[in-house]
Amino acid sequence: MDIVDKVSDSIIKASTNLSDDKRNALKSAIENESNENASWALTQILENYEVAQKTKFPLCDDTGIPHVIIEMGSHRQITQDLISQINKGIYQGLNKLPARPMAVKGNPIERIEQSQGLYEDPGLMKPASFLIDNAENPDTLNIHFLLQGGGPEIRAKTYRVYHKRSFDIVINEAIDWLKDSLKLLGCTPSIPAIGIGRSHYEASSLMLKSMVYGNLDDLSDEEKYVTQKLNQTNIGPLGFGGNTTVLGTFIKIGNQRASGVRIVSVRPSCFVEPRKATLRL
Image 1: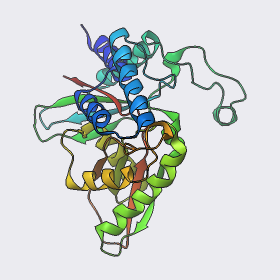
Image 2 (image 1 turned 180 degrees about the horizontal axis):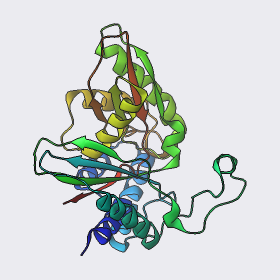
Image 3 (image 1 turned 180 degrees about the vertical axis):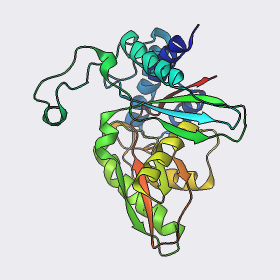
Image 4 (image 1 turned 90 degrees about the horizontal axis):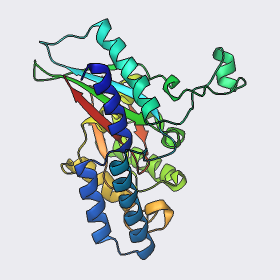
């Protein structure tokens, strides 16, 4: 199997697969949920995942925008040929799913105005700009794929926080943003992603990397703190109430600079996210 086919299979896996840590989190939430309606909703979500994984059918009608993070050690390199193969594989995978046709036609202004309609070809939903991340193992070359849906994008926020030399101030500001956005999201339980960096680009990149590298079976104390606070909101699965507004939280904190602000990026992921898969080369 060549790289194009492997990338195509990774896109399909990201759209249809239930990871072990999310399965564990959902089963635990069902066992511990005291709200009858919330328990029913969580059970339906788990069943939806199981059916999608078995049939290789997309978890959600909003099949998302592909995002690629290349994790590379010092002994490895990437070539233009590899980049071309990744793009071809994404195109092939979106068509094989099939993804929902969402790519907008026209010149830059027409695309903003959506005045020329949509392409019928699902593969024309081109990926966002690739991110390159350093790997500790010099022999590592991993291609991570995320499929990012529109609902969480609408509710996401990247902004500055005056930290006053306090982590608590920064993280509680992010929690307040999430409390507001999760009320409006609809597709709970969420797995919020938080990135904290020096610039809007860096914070957004860290937020994406938190989704790629995060594991619900191994949350940090800070991630558990945010999870606990958000589960006290009583929003619950699909807004039904209960104590499972989020299944967990992913946080990635990057380098900081000497200043009075920290840039924070927050994404209130819907219950099908993070939709991710990794190709190890």
